Image (cartoon, rainbow, N blue to C red; front, side, top):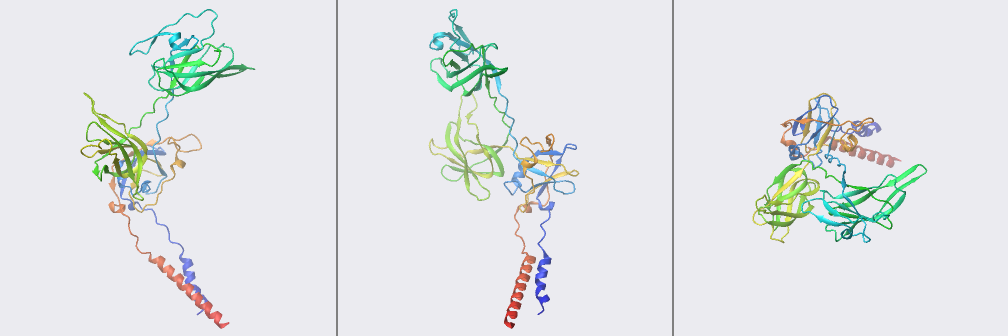
Amino acid sequence: MSRSRALAPIACLLLAGPALAAEFKPMDYAYRAPLFVNGRAALNLVPLPAEVYRVSTRTDLGDVVVVNNLDEVVPFAVRRPAPPPEPTAASVPLPLFPLTSPGNLPGEALRLRLRSGSTSVDIDQPAAPSGARPPAAYLLDLRGLAEPLTRLRLSWPDDAPDFSARLSVDTSTDLVRWVPVAGIAAVAHLHYAGQAFERADIELPGVRGQFLRIAWQGVAPVVLTAASGEHRVRRPESVRLQAQAAGTPAGTGEFDYDLGARLPLDRVSLALPEQNTVVDVEFLAQLADTGDWRSVARGRIYRLAVAGESDLVNPPLEIKATPARHWKVRVAAAGGGVGHGAPSLEGGWLPDELVFVARGAPPFRLLYGNAAATPLAVDAATLVDLSGALRTAGRPLEPVRAVLGPPAELGGPDRLVPQVPPPDWKRWLLWGVLVLGVAMLARMAYRLAKNL
């Protein structure tokens, strides 16, 4: 056998090369929906509907893609919605009353008349003797605050002498029993060589008492003229979509639920079947990849009857967004369980946001539902910042809200079922040729060695 004939199989193998990767085909996706963009906006955003979660075959929504009129994939990302912006702190003036008694007790320095339902304090204060020192302590009325006090700001005359001093801060609800809330705080008012340094703020850990007492440590260096407080305004709650599922008994104290879609719930609760029920429960979600159950929340659920009013129910439990279709609830036996009937699962969720760049000509389309899909989305962190604006070298480009049209069938429901790939005869043929070529080379080597 000639050498050229022996090397022919190997040459054929090298010329064959690797198989080409599968091309993108829109018909590989089960459903489509039109995306209507606003004018010539480059960056667009649309929340994903529940239908996408019901059809998607992946928990990471990796079988979602955006195409233009030429069926070309455009840059897109799927991300969790940004939380509402943190509200700024609100500042309110606080009634300030000096305490001149040696013990710094309000009962000794002031005669107070507290009126029920009023936020004012009537004060009869003894006249201070001439040449008296600045008050050693002050009383602040916090009853007009609806939110916990997180910062206290003190004021003194602009021409006050320089000082650096320490204060103690205590809170009370009855002007008798006082509890420290901030330890020892420091304030200062200093000037030197044309420079000025002033520290008049005292951080507080969310004070909810009705009264506050601040007392100088040592001799009072200055007379306070006013005080104001800051409290955090509650961040507005995002409007969530609601999901509900009927419970199926699954054993003693256990109930199973099927939401029909992998919705990313971040609020969970139960609708109890009977009034005047208080139970401790555990919520579990089934992991899609392993089928195991993972505990996501524990809490107390209640439904209490109130005369002449609607039932008093617990607020939903806050959890990390958990994309799961199947849920389980375990009810503690203490307290008699949930009574007769099965509780319903109630959940709140925020849909993921689809952000895409309108490259090419419309109409743009959202394709989804492909058991064999390769994720084509870019990392959301590389496309947009935390606020959802496009990352550019210049000014941030804010996304414009797009509109998702009604869905329609594309490749059909068969695309949601994983397909068993047919035998790769080409690969087996190439391996056969390779093995045959190696065998022929081994035979040639053996014959050459035998003739030597």
